[in-house]
Image 1: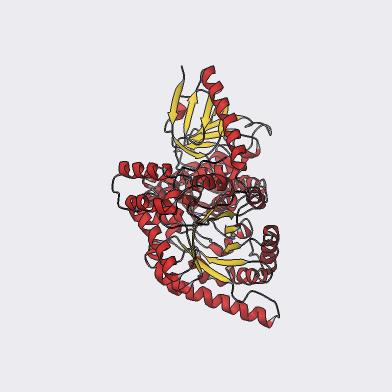
Image 2 (image 1 turned 90 degrees about the vertical axis):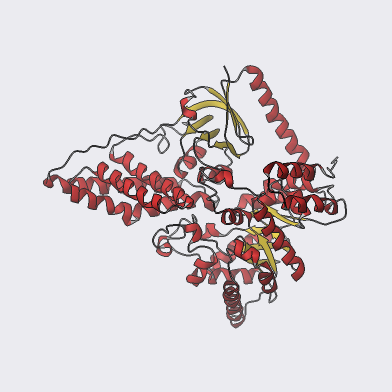
Length: 585
């Protein structure tokens, strides 16, 4: 009999394949007390296990393609930093020596103590950081007990090929190894739309579903599954009619993609003559190829964190210049907005820069705060962007702004860089546009002040929603509260757009909302005309916007701002998305 399970679809695609149940049973922890003479040998055993666990992660890091998004290597870097941190490098050894216990028991005791500390902080973000700690501790523990780990070292390069993996959760290392070996898709029992697992699945193009609790209790190894990554549905032991139906959906999806491609050269203009700007968010070379395939108007967000990842030093001015020049040449005169490095949170630079792990990185030293605390991070980057601006239309975007003093400091650094380039007789665009990201509620509320000091604004909805609603978007216990339609979120978006109009400067959106066809007509009704998104979302967004009438959308969009019930919101959103539906030939 077929069974259906529902979770959170985090990476699109329909796959049909056999189930592989990934179980990592916790090893038994011996309570054995050692003789004092045995303690030095146990210390050496723990240090050896620590070194081997680090070596395993480094091997995974080496297998990451050079053009992989920075999110991929960021997670591995975080785990490597944790292994080197004194909490895991020295803490268990102190317990081992004081208690004369086995290394496994000392490590488990350290885990429990850390869990207590994290629990007492009562911050949802901390749960995610504890997940990272557990991933690393489990890695060390498996080495200590010599437990085979199929995800780290399969018996052959085709171990995961064509399989649909079901697990409680997957580490970044798991996900990378599986992708390299051709996994068809995966389902996890925990996680949310923006959990580490979900982010990596989308980055690596693996159809995936998260948040189906206790699924492994119902699925048998080798059982045939259908995974529908968009709807979040898993079908177990489907009947042949179902299989045929989903194969038909696979073909239909491919046909829809072919139809979308017909829109590549269609101008993005509304029914009432409003010209729209549909830009791309990019990071790697493949993104540049993708934006050309969909004929994007340019780049609204170029993420540069990858230049700082997976290395022990900092990129110099020439390295920045070479990379940005290559992108600018590929764009052939289309605009390029380069975001200054948004490091911190889960995107750490080299170990020499990062220092100790923050208790709550999302609220800590990240983005412009980190850059201004150590200007060596961005001074070479600013100089390189200015040099590129001599021949290409380039803009600078400042991340994670919260106050005008940060803007003033950044503008001063840019002026200093201009002066130094002038002294070096290097050309640059003296009027280069400088904008800021609005991704903190304080910045949205003070958007008029930011608009008076900057040349453009760009709304980053991922963080704006997280900070506005005080929820960790990657904690599956609270991510049901992650709501782009929350009246407070929409009001902040509206305030930012209106501030841009009053100052007569452009306002764009580069968060996930801008690439979601469900919300773009609503955003158009609120006054947004510049959208920046992953290239693979652009044609769907264009289809949603073509034929719409902004003037008629405004009334329903403003009404949705005042809705307090979810049902009313959904009814109005449905009305917005049906209004002036475009007929595309």
